[in-house]
Each structure stands twice: as structure tokens, then as C-alpha cells.
Length: 282
Image 1 (spheres, rainbow, N blue to C red):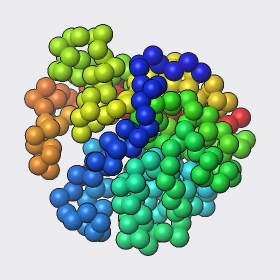
Image 2: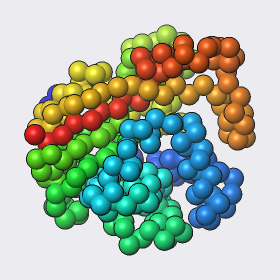
Image 3: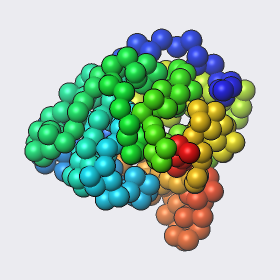
Image 4: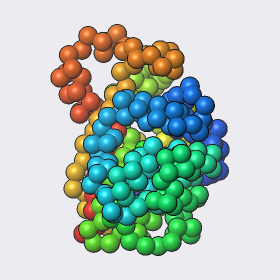
């Protein structure tokens, strides 16, 4: 599989781990004390308010009684929802700090018996996660942050059986967010695009690795590992002003404020940041 030529192959995985340990994804989605039920409730409410397509994509109720392998669980928002809806979850995470919070979350909700947690690198999954078949392999916004995403996808094959569903989200190159980054931070310097996207792809600047994919590249990523892509769509444009958002206020940027909702949804479905792919093992 030929990965997108974006210059991240030689980045040490330790740099990626250190980045996410410094600020786990979504950790500031609540001002409540980290680790309390109030904190986790607010983190979840805020995440799904801003990204309502996630429950649609994950289809949490569908996996009741099924085995789910989540690659890159972060602080466990989706993990808890799979378990809450009756799935048996194996959750993998590179960041020790994130994993610590996710484990605490499982305890707070009394779901620790439904979730197994593993710490390690998705590119070497078979080295630390027992090889067993799963009904769903799920990874939302994760593998585009590893230096060799195709290795992570190839590892998924060992946990798939005929009929296994794979759902992954990667960042979409032809998105509003990429254009915004290019114009806001790059001043049109398109030759620096890969560097600029990595620098500004996340709430905390300076992410060491961030790949973006076209639809064709995303299809190749999955199908080169033996999976068959069944569905692919884009969604999510963040419309809120950052200074207000970090103060837990939802004030839209002026050019989105007056945009009719159907027009905004058309933009999201065509130029969204999240490329959501559903595949299966034939």
C-alpha cells in the first residue's frame, strides 16, 4: 500500500505518545474535576453535540452482545457507549494518560467488567492484544495520527473473520478545514500543506503526525489490507468561534451564523473534515 506522501513515516511513535499524553483528546470538554461522573457526563454531551454524526456512524445499539475492538479509545467516550449498549469491548490506546482516564470512566459507570483495556501501539497490535475474532473493529480519528497507518490497518486483519465490520474515520483532504488552515495559517503556501495540517489539525497545536486522505486513498488503505469498502461519506464542519468555545459558549463564526441550515449541511456532506468509512471482511 502506497501511503499519501506527506512526510511522517520517520516520526518516532514516542513523539506521538508524548503529544497525546500532554493533552488527551477532549480532556478539556468540561471544567468539572477530571474523573468525576459530572465531568464524564459533560464531556460526552459536548462531544456528541459538536459531532452528532459519531453515534450515527458508530451505531452503538447494533453491537449489543457483540465483540468490539476499538483502536485508539482516547478517554473512552465511544468506548463507554459501546459497553453501555451491551457490547463486549477491547479498547486499545497509545497514550498512558488517556488510558488512565478511560479506565476511571469505566469504573465510574460500573462498566469495567465489559471492557478490557490495553496500552500500546496500533502498528504492533498483535504483540500485546490476544488475537481473537471481533464483530466490529472501530477506530475514530486515530490511524491518521500514526506514522505508518497502513501497518495499523494490516494489523486489523488478524482480528477479522468473514463478516467482520470495520469502521474508521480519517481526515478528508478536500475539506473546509484544510482550506481554512491553508488560508489562515499558510497564507496560501500550499507546498507546506502537510506541515500546516499537522500543526493545526487538533486543539493543541503541533501534532507530530496528521495524514489526510482522498476518497480513493482511503479506499486503497482498507482494500489493500483485504477489506471491502461498503460505504464512505464525509461530515463535520466546526462552526463555532474558538475563543467562545473554550469558554464553553457556542457562538458561531459570522459566516456560518447566517447560513441556512440546509446549505450548511450540504457543505458538511461535501467538504466535511471527517471521512467515515465502513468496510467488511469478505
